[in-house]
Length: 57
Image 1 (cartoon, rainbow, N blue to C red):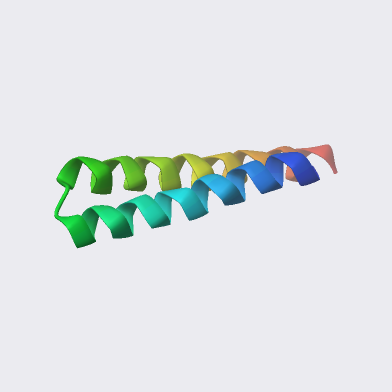
Image 2 (cartoon, rainbow, N blue to C red; image 1 turned 90 degrees about the vertical axis):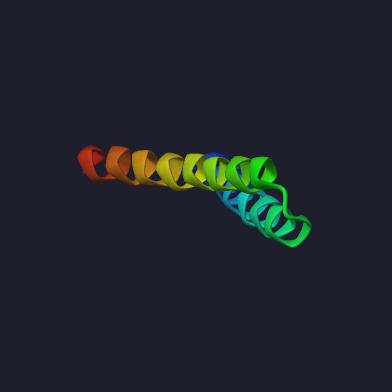
């Protein structure tokens, strides 16, 4: 996984966790859902990059 793509995926995961936590704390279901979606985007991006690396070899 390239360093840049890995950093982007990791930042999405972290921001998703933060948004989810803030949403739970404030009782905002919309923010909590947005956080879960953003974290999922980061997770999926990481999976795609790892799959690409596996097929390169």
